[in-house]
Length: 203
Image (cartoon, rainbow, N blue to C red; front, side, top):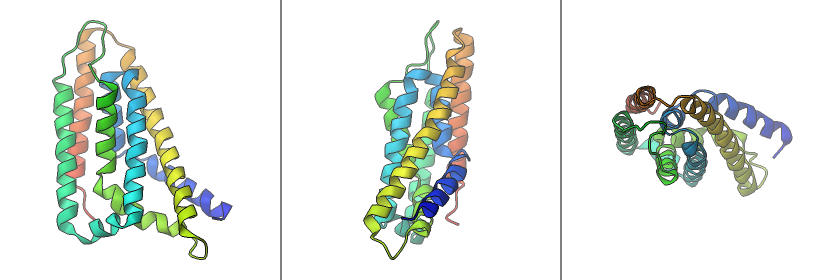
């Protein structure tokens, strides 16, 4: 892959990642409620989720999603319902004096992974976006590996920045009433992300 092509991919990816989607809204919402303990697992879940989504896209699932309105709709509403459920659970999460809402590393990782990997819009986007930067005159596998590694790395950095900023904001407060407000803000963000996901179209 030529250097200028790779740099163009980096620039295009950075612009795309700068626009928060359901995954980043999940990261913000969970970090607001869970603090720094949730940040790294969330980033790891996003990275693995993007790796899964890009791999499935390159393997052909993206084309299937783009062609099948039924499959796209099923995944879309499943993801939307999951986000809304997470938001309601965070909204209702109990708080204790001086403690963050209980978010385990395993749960944070799992939720970030599921939301990222099963985002049908993301999978369909990858199958349309990534081939634009592939040189047909060169072997496909090395180029695909480089593009996947680049995207996953940038996505992890992007998620990490959002997670740490939200976690720091969350960690600045200790009173239960304020902590509860953060939980509800994060829960509201997740419910909003679910509603936004449900409104996605294939176009």
